[in-house]
Length: 406
Length: 144
Ligand SMILES: Cc1ncc(COP(=O)(O)O)c(C=O)c1O
Image (cartoon, rainbow over all chains, first blue to last red; front, side):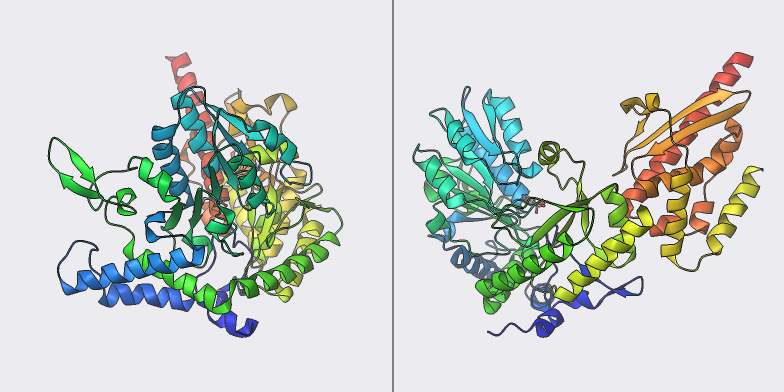
């Protein structure tokens, strides 16, 4: 399929919005991406004419809803190249996926004296669940260092892997800097010591092809809302051998086999981990988002976003007093920067007045900010519906903000 | 100037501009004029939570009036702090307790702030009122 940016932009109704009289320039895609009409309409159609609870009713509508939801699961399985749908668990997002593993894997496999390895560039969602688990179990959290250019210090990472290490949990792509970690190599290094690896893919899978079998990761967590799908749904991919050995995360309806007051036996995978009524409409919308992405082609998306990244990096580097945080390559289409003598919050507020949506602050990565000796950044994160003209507007707006603030 | 006159002045100043960029510029200028706070007060104890930027606020009670000092590491926030200071500084506790700060709505400030900054502003006002209440209570206890 040809990449026609004008047509693509028409697929996203929100991009027509005017903010304070100016066309919206949406550069906060790493926080959440916008939704194409196909997704919005699919969810509306479900609510209008397919709504029913899933996996329960004998009636026609319930079957329709169940089929739609399970079709979405299959679409997602295929997208990830997971071996079976048993390995594709619906959660409410990356955060819940990671918490699920921390809780259930933790119960099954973590004991006092064990170690869990993360890195200094993680999002809080991939720090705190492990911290709490370690506290509960008397295990210890080991933090792999990063280099000044934002890349992972691989020698230090290697030095942390030992016979006590029971799990490695790493970001595929840093949400602050966009730096892509060499996860295939990192997974391989851990596997050489029989250590399973969880990958936080929240910032990667919207922008690049992810094949869980090729990566050989043991868990892969991500959110629909960062990949043009709805909020409230995400995925935990897990290898069957681990998921089978792990106890349920939450308990209740939808996840049981037999229940009596003496004993309950649990349903098979993936339902064992899906207690309660799921976000049916969102799941179906998620499936549609993946179809939409695949229709354009993830490689096409990646190539176009790369052009935006290169252009943006060049444009912003030309601005006096602007420093990009995280320069290591390869990167996803994220540019985090600071401005000499200017608080990120002031800059973000003025950009907002000029119709440009960026994220400012610590981006839920306080340890990384500490390492970089900064209190926050301004982050522009691109999606394939953004344009070079919008980047020009951003660059102009930054210069204008500088003149006002300095 | 009475509290009422100060508020009217501020509303008039804001009406001079017809564009929010210019109003922001004006707030930034006020931020640059703000004297800030003595270094010794830039501690956790005086930090107000709920702001993405840091805001420090201290208060002293002198001859029936409250003397505030406030500061922020972000210049727009500092401008807003300065604007509040113009209204509340050197007032009696009762004047501050009676103030509903609705002039901020009149100038449209709240709706033009990001939600986090609006939160921060509310926290600031809450803290200012709390100081006023504490000084008033102390005064009453002294007199009783
Ligand atoms: C790297 C990373 N991990 C985890 C999360 C949490 O995702 P969610 O809030 O969708 O659960 C985010 C979202 O910002 C992220 O960027």
